[in-house]
Length: 119
Image (cartoon, rainbow, N blue to C red; front, side):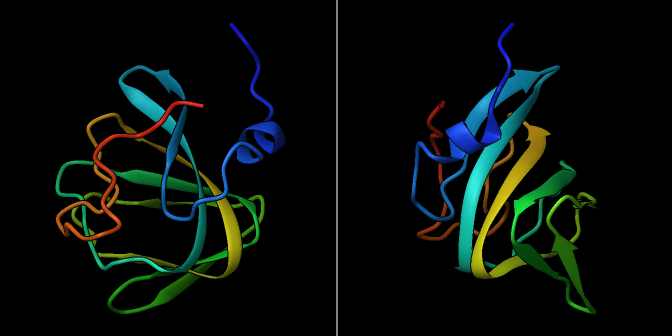
């Protein structure tokens, strides 16, 4: 058992849209990612995703609305819901999702990460 310092972990990488595994529990992974710009529209047919904003403001676009998630807030995107994260400025997020979850869900692109580094 080791505690995790989020500032230290986020200091270990600079790439955007490349989640890093910071922990695992009960078949779920705790992932850290830095975001900037627009991601791809996608959905996850079998998994819910939790986005916890550690730093910045994340815009989660849905086909019918946009939700702004501020620092210290989180949003759960239900499985099967098409969405697109957008970060006008750098955003740090902590994600909770099943270990089988592919970051781009059903939309393979140049942002798809098949193998995640552990930090």
